Image (cartoon, rainbow, N blue to C red; front, top):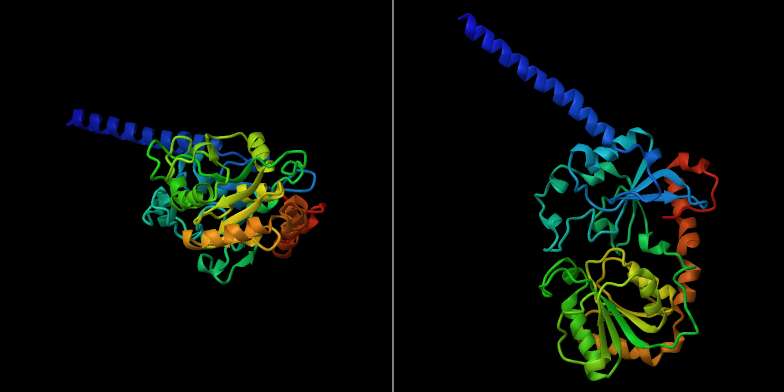
Length: 357
């Protein structure tokens, strides 16, 4: 009987020791691994996006750009959000990833599963009352009691870096960007978002029917609908500096994209004076398309009409001038400052001309 009592006591002590170790050592270690906001640099891990003043100093306000995918523990996105919130950081939602905060429709995205814990464990409408939106109809994905402004991440590109080079001859009629997902060219995240199937049909019209010269970036080993010889260059991933040069020597960027919320390549190209042919059903980026920048299309049946209109009136568009006058870090930054200061009073004390991303 005494032996059983001793064994029971020993087992109890071991269990209690494990319990103490876990809660006082492991948990404390995890908490210590969460970074304090003041110790973080200007570039935050996604889904967090820092907001800076006109002196490039990070302010105590952060954008959240997609669902909380890293769950619990030392790298938990939600845990980091809670810690920074307790430190006095303000949070604002931004629609720059597919339909977020609505459910995602891309079948090649793991977050398209509505039973994923990034949806089941979190209600983003409870977390964020203020939103920067790219949508034509923001209330389709955001509750109608939220404060919303038509401001996108893609508004804030550096127009001092992305700019025309008038000394360059136009080598290409069009550029289309669709990064390769894997060896199978006919499936994947980019395949769906960048609308590869419609993209190939547009290229067939431009190169095959009209003999235009184009460049496709990201799908060098993916077959097109036909062989266009030297009329269509295909390249792998490019550095940003290389991409800027391509934009500067290209007449038009082709975006058949649909479930694309913040197409920076569009604003980068416009800033370099590329015209644009954009899918009218694109989630974000539609606001940049007008008589100054380019034309809309919806499918291969009306693409040819829009394409001919754009190239026949090429000199009547002025995309870089339009973008510089309406967007970029300063213009968009002033709009961002006005909107955030209107709804977050403590930000009014910051001495800055504008906020930027």
